[in-house]
Image 1 (cartoon, rainbow, N blue to C red):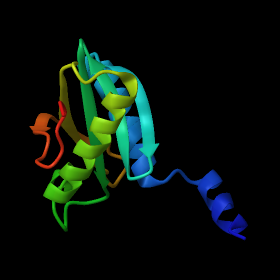
Image 2 (cartoon, rainbow, N blue to C red):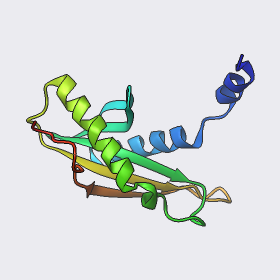
Image 3 (spheres, rainbow, N blue to C red):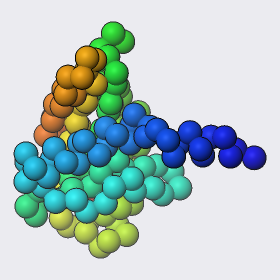
Image 4 (cartoon, rainbow, N blue to C red):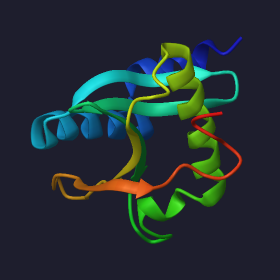
Length: 138
């Protein structure tokens, strides 16, 4: 039914996925992190990247934009998005028996540049705290 769509996906990488790949490479090479999971889904949410920074589990939200005309990419990690990420992180930690491990939420904001310039990548470590309504210990 959607054969035409799958053909397009095979030819061109979606901007969000390209951004996640760039973010992962950046965090591994520049920040010394290690990848635990990428594109982790569960019924009610998704985690773009889950990384290890030493003993800390890092949940990384990647925001990619082609310009900043409508705002910087990091501005799109709203309170509602933070709540969803907190819920997904909690499920991730529970399923692995890691509730006692230190964790944090980072944001990687990527702005694609025109004219063949490399993308602008900004990393916000500990960008936000786990949001209310979701408890990591209960």
